[in-house]
Image (tube, rainbow, N blue to C red):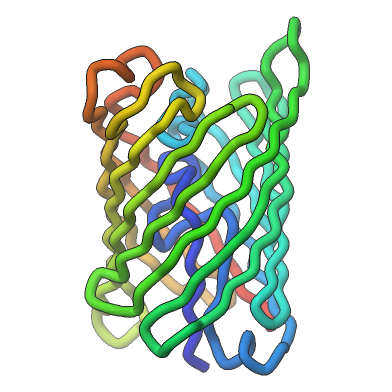
Length: 244
């Protein structure tokens, strides 16, 4: 069965790349027929980044469970930090996707993010809405715009590219991704092109599980973001499963 699972790359350094994690959307025969499906992803990452911003946290285990029916999806996402032996994030997201033409789809969604801001502040929540368009073409160009109403109190837009290259006959693929972000006071006091990233992952099916070692390189684009967005290299591996 042909299927395409696209994950928003707003956590590219933390989760994955434009294969990518965190709010899923599906364009497939299952979605068109209204059938239910589910996906579980367990990414380990060497460093925690959120929309390019560093939390100063190393070695995290993430988990995301996504369920969908028709064009609707809902997902839960957590981040566990090994050094402190504690959870530092727990999110809930919903999204609607519609395929407009064979080569064009759009999506709208919202998220409730919950962050552990330390012993003095404790857990804080924030709300965000997002939307965008994706094209089924060479490099699968996608534009995502998100606005945070509370802690982030700003907007950012991301332009993403991704491509998968089959390797041999065992369904192994080499997945490339890249994105560039424009930040308008999103978790910062400044506006401008904030960063770009490039990534490479190797997707290896092992029974029902796909293992994907990944390496991501992020570079800051404007010195005004020096204290918010670092130059970084992130490595990790993701175990993922799909159910229908």
